[in-house]
Amino acid sequence: MVAAFCWLRLREVTDNLVDLLIRIIHGISRRAEKNVDTELIKDFKKVGGKTNLLYQIANVSLENPDGAVKEVIYPVVSEKTLRDLVKML
Image (tube, rainbow, N blue to C red):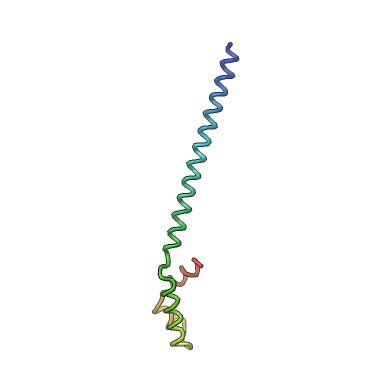
């Protein structure tokens, strides 16, 4: 009788441990998806008006074809913005 009780109790404990493991894994997965979504949205919003920026760069470059990048392009579009744009592409 005690052996049957121990066997039944062992199955219950095993089932509870498996359920707990499944809940933990589900929580980790949910947090990971949320973090990935947050990073993707942050990267997507990082550089706004890309078409306008590229138009301004092209326009300034055509007006001053012999000018240095620091003198011609950086006053129109900052170096950080260009780095973010390159990183995004």
